[in-house]
Image 1 (cartoon, one colour):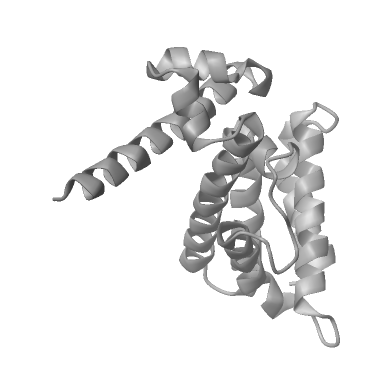
Image 2 (tube, one colour):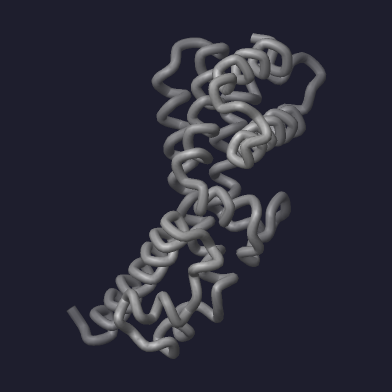
Length: 192
């Protein structure tokens, strides 16, 4: 291994450590607790080292969001592939989405609530975000209905899931009714 390859590998490892530490701190104490000073202390590197990887907290949030999008896409695809038939796939997709949001609140916030400097829904959208949307579209496109654009249907279904996840987490909806909401969403919106 050349010196250059070793330095690149070490840089990538430091970057993963920064992202993992930021994510862990955000999940434990919230995003307000994630500062470059605190991250530098936790990973035992100086703040200038952090700034050599990320220009600031915004880029760190973006990196956590991209990692989370990759994980969400994998979870959605796994749930859909394990289900048999359109209704079971859509139901599994909805449950998995809501479960991901509940189990990973800081990641979910990085993806959909905080400014991570990422663009959505255009050609500059980073691939992990496109892939997460595609994971929804793959199952929802088949139940969109005649004359309904699959992408638009997926956006509406996703918006419904996001609303449920956000309102439940904010204690605006009782969590014990989540399963009934999923069934209603699948029955009425997806009509499968």
